[in-house]
Length: 345
Image (tube, rainbow, N blue to C red):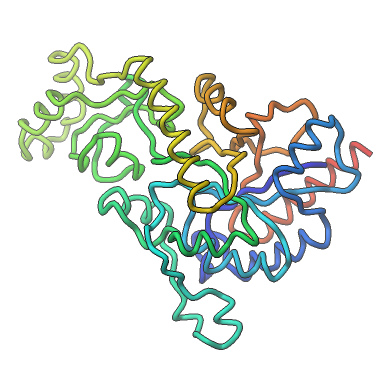
């Protein structure tokens, strides 16, 4: 049995993601029941076309949140476990600052309340898009200090979603994915049409035309107080615009993908003094072009398909199992992995 686990955040208090005490217990369980390896070893099994004799897992984190340093890193170090962190390079804070961690708490240097309290992923990414910086992401100094535990992998420069199909799903009313700020290129307005979203690198990006935005703004606030404003707006847009999205051409997309791969890879290698061999698709989204371009520069790429790795799996479409926030769900994953092992014995 061969599997790769996916985490994003490890938090101070039991709340929206994996609590640090839960993570500590999970790492203890993994160490006792599994052989924990790095991604190079996962690829080696695939290349040799054989599964390991003992249940084997690798641990990965996505995005590069500050709590990976403050809470996850000390716990992994305590258990002498290695992991891979797929970092979105635009989010890195250009500072050598290193914040206190659980290690400082364990040594009595700080109280738990003094440790940084993580934001949700939505809050952190929205703050970054608005301010171009968020304290919820790692600093250069923190990344460099984690190299004894973490290897680092490609996860794009920007990590955003974009519109890819001219099919109105609804209209913006004040709530939505944080990437809407990027997709519209400005603060979303009530009445802006919502189209299907996917990871920006996996699609031919469509941007809402300026004239459509101006038309919606010209309707005034009173229009959106009407009971049937959505039906009326849908009719007006269809009447006045033959198309609402302006799509990049194939050459622009090819160049954008290549640029994001190379820039992120080169920056990470420069910051960490490590070669970057592995990548993870932002949001797990990919298509043939993105997969093909990544295969030119990396040894593997990981999705978010929730299953263990099988012999014959494409090294550029490798699955990972997202670990939910509660211990019972983690134990369910562990039991399923062991059942799979028994089936193949």
